[in-house]
Length: 134
Image 1: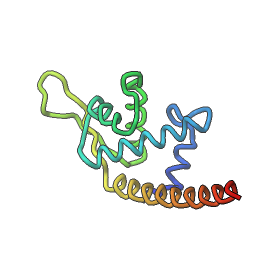
Image 2 (image 1 turned 90 degrees about the vertical axis):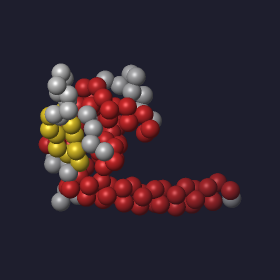
Image 3 (image 1 turned 90 degrees about the horizontal axis):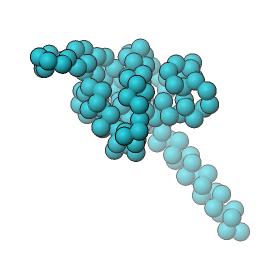
Image 4 (image 1 turned 180 degrees about the horizontal axis):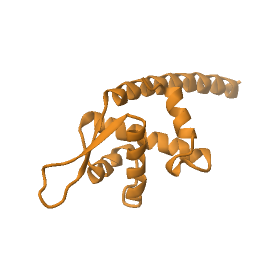
């Protein structure tokens, strides 16, 4: 199973647009996490997933689709998603992405880690706010 720490190591390796400043790595991790949530709900193809990203605050009108496909390739390379060619359309074939059992497990772990981090941040905020009141 791919755990959160291992996943972070993969992201730190600098694949895709994660090169450069740490913000890019965090954005890639957030994008991939959002894609896994979308794939958990339903298999999808690139543009349908792009539309789904709007609910997470992405401005998809200005987002380059190549960033999305790069993130999907990263998910495939790490075994968190798989793709296949759709047989639905006779004119244009689409690559359909599906979350894997490993992706489901990884997503579950990440969400629990994020919940724990949120609790820790709330404790820190409360302690800071108490200091400011005195």
